[in-house]
Length: 165
Image (cartoon, rainbow, N blue to C red):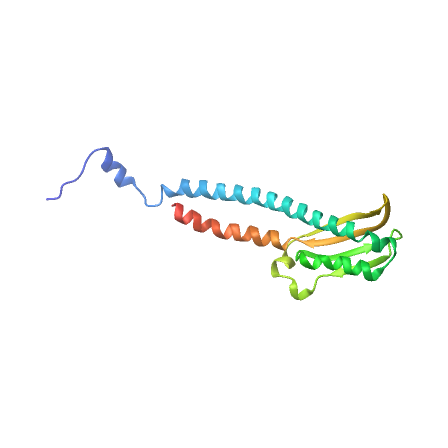
């Protein structure tokens, strides 16, 4: 003779479906993760662009003497400072007439997979000497570092969500 439970708790147990309580939690967690990814992308993008602009401004300031004296060798040496910035793919110093004074191109062996996938940021900075335009620095940088950082964040989110549930 089996005893059949009765009452409000037994009715809830009969209607209970495994995972039904997790569905709203998972939806909330995925929504929060998506929002976090968008906010992080905007922040990283702004930070990346600001850092590249700062680095390019420093080189534009140091290359002005080479531009004034029209020295391709000295200008090339100054552009080699971009070797320390892996996201910068090319930099070109152009005279006011548009001709190229010096050019830097990142070694293809140093490029990562992310740098081939991400978008390209282009900067154009004036090179001034005594408030006179002596050249223009054109810089092309890819967003490989930004995408790699964002991918790392997105890869960690499922692990965090799994531990949270």
